[in-house]
Length: 145
Image 1 (cartoon, rainbow, N blue to C red):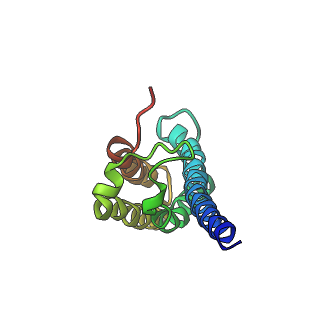
Image 2: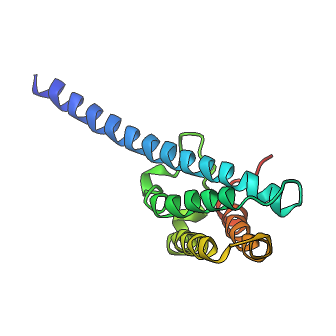
């Protein structure tokens, strides 16, 4: 009987760890997906493919600023694999550098939200937001094949 209980306890711990791993991966994927959506309209505005819309820009910046601190906690050591993650191992090798990106993204999004008042200020500030995304994608994310 003790042996059965021991086996069940080990299985429960393993299942809990696997759930926590997939939960972190799933949560970060949701936030990153929301960021992709948040970048869409302002990206089109920046390219001249859509008219400038301050409300959409502000909503996008809010999504990014609110997601950044949440993301920083969603890369525990047990989430290196699984869940179809595109996170590269370098995240855990350079964890401090990686987490600093989220601090910068949050600060830049908040600063841009204050600075952007019109199309001219948008064109000056928005590239900083995109550059943050590029920094992370080039170094810490598996590239599409």
